[in-house]
Every structure is written in structure tokens, then in C-alpha cells.
Image (cartoon, rainbow, N blue to C red; front, side, top):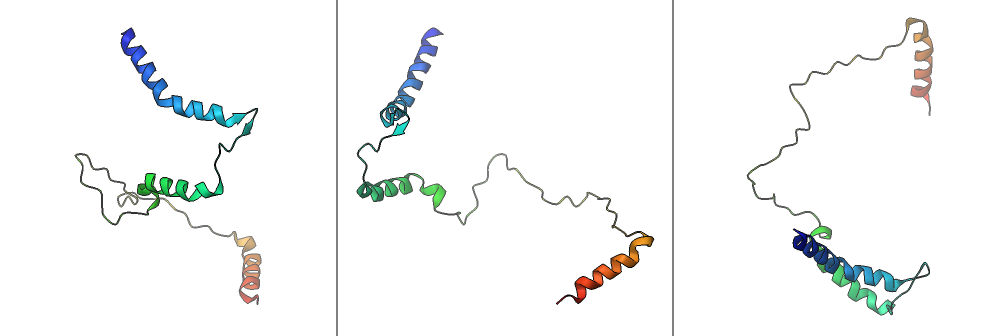
Amino acid sequence: MEDTGEAHLHALREQFEPAVQLRQKRMDKGKVKTQGLSDNDIPQLRQAWQQEFADIINGIKEELPPWREVNHEINLIDEDKQYKYHLPHCLQALQEQLHEKTNQYINAK
């Protein structure tokens, strides 16, 4: 068991070590160093990132994904659901004021 745990930790260290080293190199008392990158490097970096993340940034595929053993369905409208909805109404005492105000908006230019 200990060998498996140590092997797992070793694998994690190997996986994250380059990122840790890069961060340590870039940090200098809270300031980020450029590490020798210039404006000329930007097109190469952009192209590398576009190739790496092409599946994300190239838009939506016009084909459906393949059928799986379990296909999920999201029902946006439940046709069997009955909603209780009461239309709002104005009190009899305030209807005249409501009509006056409504007419002001209707007649506004």
C-alpha cells in the first residue's frame, strides 16, 4: 500500500513540477517577469493555443453526438403540468386612476 501511495505522489509531483518551476521562475517578489518573451513571440503562441484548443474555439459542430448507451433528455416543457395562474386585477376603487394613467401612456407622443 505504501508503494502505491508513494508512486501516486511521485506521479503527481512529476505532473505538476513543470508548472511549479515555471511559477517560481516568473515570480520575483510579487512581480511577474517576462521570461524573454517579446512581441514577436505572440503569433507563435497564438497559433499554438489555437491548435491546442481548436475543439473549443472553432464553433459548434453541425452534427449530433453519437448515440450512447444512456441518452439523457432535458424536457423544457412539461405538457402534463397544470399551472395555477391568477390574472392580476385592479381594485374597484382604483380603476378610475388606473384608466387615467393608462390613457396618459397611450396618448403620449
